[in-house]
Length: 396
View 1: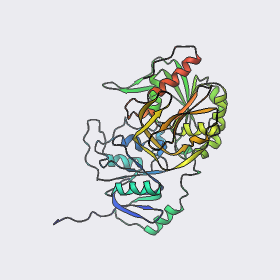
View 2: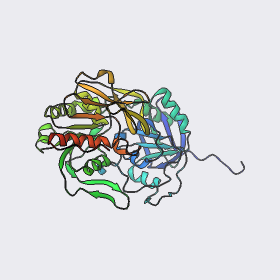
View 3: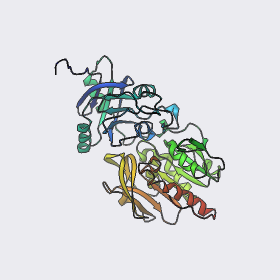
View 4: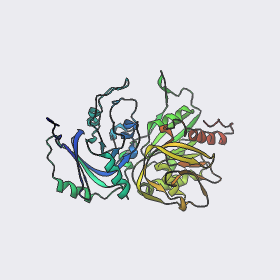
């Protein structure tokens, strides 16, 4: 076509095997090294990019139009704003358009810059996704330089030298520095987020990288939540007189985090208090009962993952973000598998026999179904109610 020229390369992704992907930079200027994954969700890019569970990763979005509804201050998931974003970078197919949404308060590109996230647009994200599916999630460097100056050999060496997520504890970078109380309830049309006026229960949530909407779901069911740091000991948690314990989502290798978290979880389980875990919390609950975790080939990242609940026989559409999983064949006799991925039969939920303790691998607060998995929060509160001799709520 007359007058057309190839856009200048202002950003690159260099994989550890030497593969170079060239595109146009957006967001922050600089470079970052991490693991490249892909996410198949069609919506929720702002929530994804502020999910602390993605620390140490570079996200490839398979949906081609990312950024077209802009950004706002309500859809941020991290509670630890001092940590900015655990996500290192994002890769998108098409350049960012001007936002077109009544909730938009800031252009996506400006928002990425403010959060220190490096972006790249203009590559064939389908080809990169295929590569990940075939070869697994690669280590890589993403770099953005408006002048297009890149030392590709140095970037390749940096990607190759990065040790990867196995054995890496990333929770200290995203956990709360000090404890705090949470009382914000879920968003409602025309009203926004509410406040819990009359708390009925007290839940202590151990923050391994907790998301705001998890806390809102708990508050919406009458729980005043005290959020504590990931390194808080069991004695300190029990001194708060909780009615239940929540183990949050988070990033990194569960075995690495489990070195200090698992002993605490084991003590809490022995008290007989209701315990509910999500994502990393699920994995570390598995470790605390003697199961093992394993690195996945391509992980599960998206909002369209079907999971079967063996306790009800129902299938729910779930949101997932994990690169490690509990090995289902390693569960002890004291536990049973409650949920299973219908994509690859990997474990997605467990509960302990004779104890009010359960967990799931996916994110029930993310609402892709949209409310397929909200019953899990009610199930947790019902365990608290049962311990108090109160009648159960109907699961929704």
